[in-house]
Image (cartoon, rainbow, N blue to C red; front, top):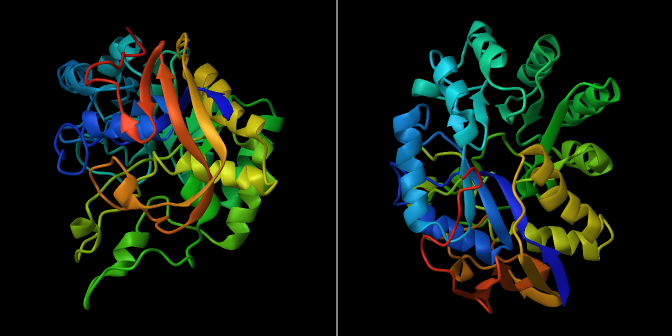
Length: 358
């Protein structure tokens, strides 16, 4: 039996408020515990987005009532809320800046809108960028100009990981994360098919950043030392939505991340220590997270089984890794001395989770 520390996922879309038919604080934290994750950090692009004190309280109140593992809530950077989010920094997991396409109150489609956030958000607080390709290069330049550490979300391309490597070699204060689907899938990977005629199975490949080429995937694996964190970017949508004429982008991933990585470890692609560093040691440091005393995860590292969405706790009810054979099953999770998950059953009650900023 393999014993791991309680793992941390710094990039999760909870969908509450506004889209609880996909997920909420109850179901997302059940899926997290089943995946060996005892702390998750929630993204702010909900309905409404989390971008001021009132909306932050909406999310934190829901989490306090429902969450079964520990949690934090990001604030979203908007075109006119730099002073507001800076004042709320101690209560938040960090600031999320959407520098590529997004909508509504969090849309930052002009670089002049970035400046007040870099100037005002505390340098000691995490600042996370959704920034792809050339936009990512611009974010790194802003980090240098304003001497503000940044964390790059969901790196997926060869050009991105090589630029981050070069930036780190120059001493620039940048860290990054990579998602399992960008490590294990390419744009040519077959994904689970819909049943019946006329189903838009292509919708199940929709994710942002998009799935890339095999050369991009190889570059991520070849530059593992540059990657600070693994993160799911858990983004649940229902199958009806994914198979619709306008499929939203995003994959669920909380329960599949650890077994996929443990399988890669069994194949010699990385070590268990590499996993712990990127799912515990580094995110704990980057996001300034508190200790969780008497907390650990037990894994049967010899268990071989197929991933099945029917075994999952996410409300969305599907996975892009359906049918994949993996090695390594979470059998028990102890959170602050209490057994929170054991042998496929959630034992932590709603509200047992704690806010990492309290």
